Image (cartoon, rainbow, N blue to C red; front, side):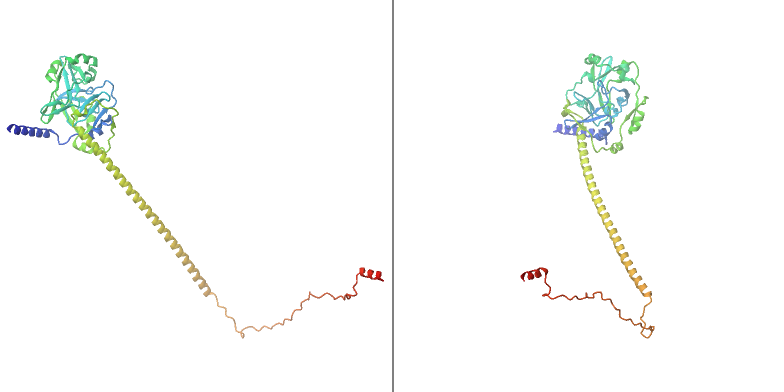
Length: 410
């Protein structure tokens, strides 16, 4: 019973320590997406794992090769010369996929660098930690599977060039790395100190002895504005500039729509063993983005319907107003016509009233005019009958033929 109580108490203390170690805010997947989409593409693998792949890299490129190492109060800090380095080398993990090549899996925890180390008496090397590696406060780096990275993942250099500004010029090629790889010793040295993750790596004094010179400790200057960071990050002074976005900058950066390409082939990554905690959150933010897109489309449809209704209403109002104006014009025209007709009638009556009234004089007042007697006119009789001609009687009118016949009879 006592052992159970002690175990529960220890578990509670461990959980409270881990919760206290988490910052009150952190970089969100949304912020990673908007900051890195200009330098690469986002790919969704197997429907639930979202990764980022950089653009413009050559075939032999490896993570943690374009930059320099600096010793700081947080241990070995990787100062990247690449524009996406503030995120991909201080958050998350890298994986060399057989199909997609080097891909980056985002995570929330910030560290000076997330690498594993190898070294011998002549060379020191480093490679990016895989997504199966998880940092735990009380245990350091813990792997979810038995992990052994291939020698081609590693960068090796002589000790005297380890802190050089042009470190990439002195990296060993893969043929030399393959010869020395098996003779090197492996090391990961991460621990938690005063709310900070420390990358101890290979001991600094050991590297100084092998390099033959003293390595100065550099100060990390945190900048929470990317414009200021981009302006000063090319400086090669004693200071090291680390960009860690502020809560205000993270909250102000909101992306409503994620342009994530669906992977066309199965990845060799074992997604069930991925130890990063951002996979669940990225899926949640993608769902929230889809919900925001649906809500935005619904709002757009509502606004469109409202605009259509308002436009229809305004058209109806305009049509009614036009009809009212036309009706008023017609009424005014008819009124003016009636008024003009009334004025004409009144004017005619006035003119009629103004004309003098003719009164027929009485017989006594009439002038005495001698009447002229008009004799009846003799009309010519154009219908005078023709003079009558006396005709012989019927018995006396005999034709010559009859006379000849009568003479013949005699």
